[in-house]
Image (tube, rainbow, N blue to C red; front, side, top):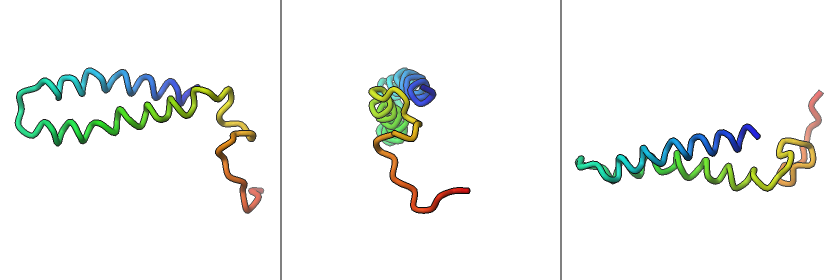
Length: 72
């Protein structure tokens, strides 16, 4: 649940920031826009990955690799 909250909050925060950069009349705004795009894209990927799972951090998580060494 915390990953979904992080993703939604960060993506929602980045929308007005990116729109301000996009419509601003400043030189070099394309570099600044491209710098901030990952802060929108990565949280969206987190939301997409965690949303369909009921308990993403359990032992039955489908993407988790098996441990080679057992922790004591």
